[in-house]
Amino acid sequence: MDPSSGVNRGAAVPFLAGLTAALDRVVCWTCIALFVAILVVMVLQVTFRYVLNAPLIWTEELARYLYIWACWLGAPVALRRGNHIVIVFVSDRLPGRLARAMALVTQAAALVFLMQLTIQGSILTVKSHSVDAITLPIPWSAIYIAAPISATLMILETMRAMWLGAVPSGGDVPA
Image (cartoon, rainbow, N blue to C red; front, side, top):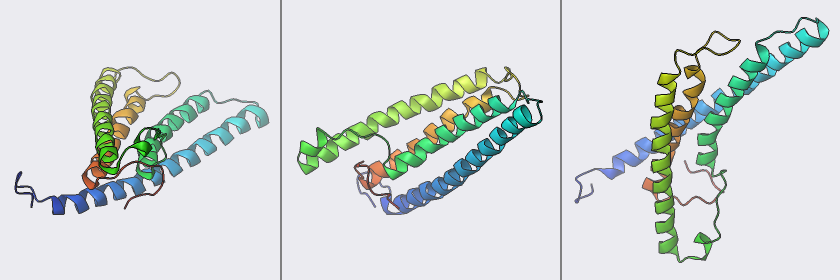
C-alpha cells in the first residue's frame, strides 16, 4: 500500500502484467492469422489471374487491408519485446538514476503521443464509417480502427513498463 496515495500498488502490477501478457498472446496469434489470410488471398489472386485468366478485383485491396491490420497489431508486440528502434547514445552515458529518469520522461512523452493517436484515430474512424472501401463492401472505419486499437495496446504496455521501472533496451521480454 502506498501511504501517499492510498493505492495498493502490489495488486495492480501483477494484474497489469498479466493483462498485457494475455493481450500480447492474443495479438500475436491474430497477426499470424492475418499473415496466413494474406497468403491465402495472394494465392487466390495469382491463381485466378494467371491460371484461370479471370482476375478477382478485390484480392489486392483485401491483402492490403489485412497487411495494414497486421502492421498496426505488430507494433504493440514489438514494443513489448523491445524491438522498436531505441536511440541509447545519450542514455547509455548517463548515471543509473538519471538514465531511469530520462527513460520515464521518454515513456511519458510516448504516452502523450499514443493517447493522441487513440483520440484522433477514433475520431477518424467515426468520420469514415459512412465511406465504403473501393472493391469491398466494408467501411473505411474497419481499416482505420486498427490505429486506435494498436495505440491503446501500446498505452497499456507503456504503463506496465513505467510501473515496473523497465528501461527500454531492445533485449529481454518482461513477463
